[in-house]
Image (cartoon, rainbow, N blue to C red; front, side):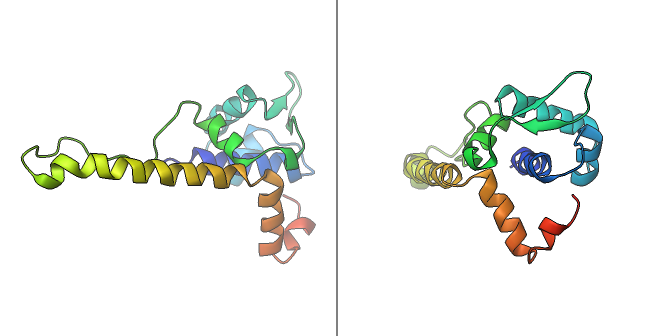
Length: 146
């Protein structure tokens, strides 16, 4: 699995909570990656109408309240086409009884697991992630400059 979703969440939290202007350079420093990768992710978030930036001005902002943005929206922003998370291996031996049946058995299981994940992401918001960060850091997170 790739890391676009976690990087997108990192970016969204930084934009939401920082008192400093967030641009691709400052975000890249926080994520510990290069600014061009951040620009790729932020372009996807912009296309999904989750964030905005103004040409000629430095910085980004959320387009909606953090309590109105669920994690599934962020996930779908960085994975705009339906990507199966769990896939059955291909090119099995057709003469093997397991090989003959493994795909038919595993596909419904994998589909159900993916649907449960998506429902879980939809039930959580960006605000929930921020709240959990604060709780995990004994409120020191809210007193630190990001």
